[in-house]
Length: 508
View: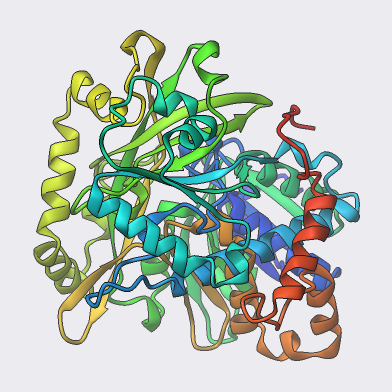
């Protein structure tokens, strides 16, 4: 390293901004595809996976569309649309295949440190909601991706499935639940740390924590000039890179806007914060073993779908309920209150105002959430755990999500709740915006990015063969091939040690 950091100039092939699950996944995939690539990683905090990838910050689950009711809307004619659920379930299977590939390579020695079997359930009450869930079950079980899903309105069966939820419940009202035994809980914080540990051990990869990217500019030679500041010493460095990935979670939008690429113009962000009620009573935690999702309140964002969630965090079983939504102008949990106002530019002002005007119910919902008292939060919890006692639960602050606002020719601007990859025309820079399902589908999102930003190499026989090694079902539809779907699941379940696995182990 040069004595004077201010004069340092480096020339990596790839720069990854942000040390979360997205950058970790992309970095490992690129090094598998082309081992001689040089990569530099910059993270503004002093540890990896400290924002949205951390298990306490909302990402400690496995969104596979088994139980999330917002992925299966009811159409005007009364039928259930499962197309989005099919896509997300297939994407999650690609993630499982990639993780199994890494376990087989010895990259991750102990899969149970980051993934554990946890049944996924949907639970509703009231005749209208029961009818919806019944129709949803009938529609979903036509797809091989949801083979094995069970449905019941029998209170005894429901008590066997979720005893904590059924304790003290009025059983005279209509109740129903679905259950997917093959559901999983994924600790993305642990997974991300494993991936970065592996990356740092590979040749040509350097990681810089506590370093913040302050400027991005593409020069006439096509290379990106990236200016970085060491937050602990204020020393500067200049980086010249062929490709830049902005995977900084809520911090991606400001950097995308700073890049000046035409494709980034018009994008805005709407931050939504979250909180959990965390159970502190081991006896209560032991009574529940599932992820149980309900129906979202009218006007609420998808990330606020209520659920009673069994998780494995730092090797210990945990039980959370929520999340309760809130509003802040920060784009990151450890960000600045100026994040939102500073993100407003001339080219995205109209889309942001239009999105705000057309999402008044969301605004009202967030205000009501912010004004909630501890008693209000406990009342929401008791809809799922009727016997809940406030002394057994404490409030835990979750992470930040920045929902995407984009230009729309008819409405001026629309608020999106998914994830979006924005890339330049020449493929030299890409940014990931948005939230759910995010981490669970990181592998598919990064595969799409690779094909978009490295089109010629991605089509080469060498890269195609390697992608098939990492994701054996790549290029084939599991939805349309029941036998392949079953074979893939059998293989990944065995490698990831998911069969009969309801135990937990500490991180390794």
